[in-house]
Image (cartoon, rainbow, N blue to C red; front, side, top):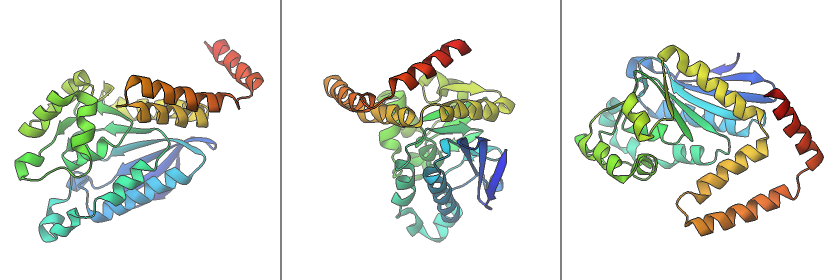
Length: 258
């Protein structure tokens, strides 16, 4: 483990070998359940930009300290200055620029704005104590960090409406059955398992990992014929440049390792 920098509200460290690293970004306001203050968001944007621009980083893990991933926006800050809710795009832009796999490790509560933050991840994994909820309707707000568009793409329209219109909590086991998270782990196994998975992704061919991720994201929601045409065009443009001798050597190495 290499600590390359610690900030008061967001911690950043690298795991793995020098050229196949995973950036671990940790929200660090445990006493406030990692509530999203403007200062924390600014530091989160800095951390995402650092990981994005580091060519040695092949994957990113996002998590939180303490009993929560994030309880959502900092209500005390909002009560003192409601305008902090207006500028929503800087954080979303920091996430949308990422080309590397982003894995969310959900430890404990993930509520409303915190859930919107989690939904920016490519893949979500949870501890057995994780609890999910969207309470926008309970407090009289509308989602502005893409929850209304991302949640139903993961769990379906009817389940998304159930969560968002009722504000009910969803435990980790139900979240797994609904497809909100890929797998559930005992609390002490969550981070080691997700870091190992992220390291496996980082060790793969960078261009292929980023290209396949982009193919899936771009094709999601397209008519299947359009998605297949896009895959054919993009993949052939890539594959025509592949060194097949090198590719076969890698394939043989993979098969020998089994």
